[in-house]
Image 1: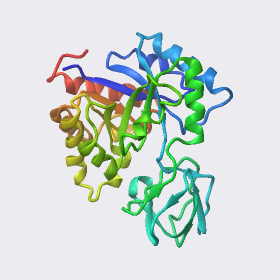
Image 2 (image 1 turned 90 degrees about the horizontal axis):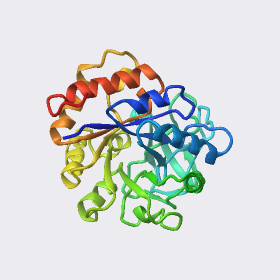
Image 3 (image 1 turned 90 degrees about the vertical axis):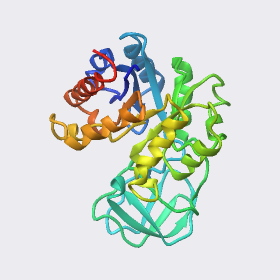
Image 4 (image 1 turned 120 degrees about the horizontal axis):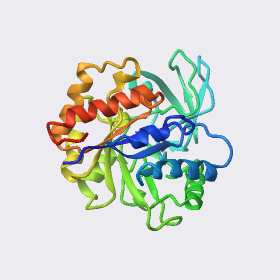
Length: 305
């Protein structure tokens, strides 16, 4: 069993090549909510060159698709919050921020405009994830305008590796066909509807990812994340475990006992590829520490480095 890692990388980080050279790293992920300057095509060409030069590793573009993101800044007390998609949902309903730690009550919806009764006592900023956990929720469209710009730039840069957020049906996995019919896709499972897709529709389709950042917030009860993650790896033995990996390293280079136990549990389930999320990937030391820790933990399954 070969343990591998995919690492989120800030597009202008000076340590990209060093991270890509690590023996565990099979690829780098660009989160498309990160701010960039100038030509997307030139940026992607540079990142692709840096990634390939360290051993022909993969650059992945993470598209946001139907994931709800905040547009603009909204200062409390709120009267409205604009989001990345028009949507429909029966109100009143709760909207969650900060990995479910904060909430606001939506009393009316007007397209992409959420009218709120109250909300977190802080500024809500652009790019923040927002979760509305209700069976009546319907989000219009799939690929965003930003997604489409990245796909077009990726075509010119020769990139075919894409992660699709919030995959909930077989139709979602066909979103790139009008642009690129031979894309290498990873389907991020981040919702209860996504788990239904895994149960009822997935059949040797795109590689699955247990995207635990939003999935933990979206499952009906927090402890159901265990069953959800198990379901994904049982369905696709090549699935990726992503997000909430060694998050304590963002605050200290000594990992928490809970983080070590969490990753050990994922290894025991059979996960062989781990994707490090944004939280520990802003700094070189936290990334390298996470990679070295994963390597050390995986030694009892296989000698990695």
